[in-house]
Structure formats: structure tokens, C-alpha cells
Image (tube, rainbow, N blue to C red; front, side):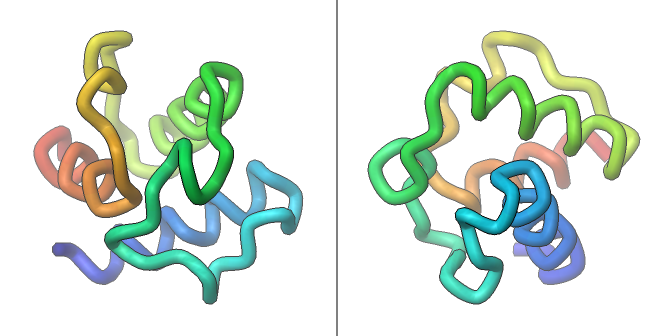
Length: 80
């Protein structure tokens, strides 16, 4: 897993969720829905922030298989 992407992504989580998700509590295995309580709106906000921060584009179907923070990091790696 790309540590630089992970660190930048965790900072985005903290920013998008306005401090409700502290960076230090996230790991590669953190579950997006179960641990972070993400819903479709949360995925949309995170996708928009990640597209801007990483210069990537996501398709709606990309999010069907994302379960963990590590899954998001790997998807960003694939798109760069």
C-alpha cells in the first residue's frame, strides 16, 4: 500500500467529515460503512475530494467493491 496516498487520504477523511474521523484512528483495515458510518452522501463527498486531491476520476461502479480504507488507497493507485 502506498503510504503517501494513505496519509493524504486520511487527511481528506478528517477534512470531509469535519474532524469526526481523526486521522490517527484510521488504518488500512478500517471499514468504511461499519467503522466510519459512511453512506452514499459520504462516498460522494469523499470521491469528489479524492478526485481533486489525486487528479483521478471515479465511476459510480467503482464504489460497489470498496469496503476498507485500504481498498480506496488501492483504487487511487490504479487510477494514477
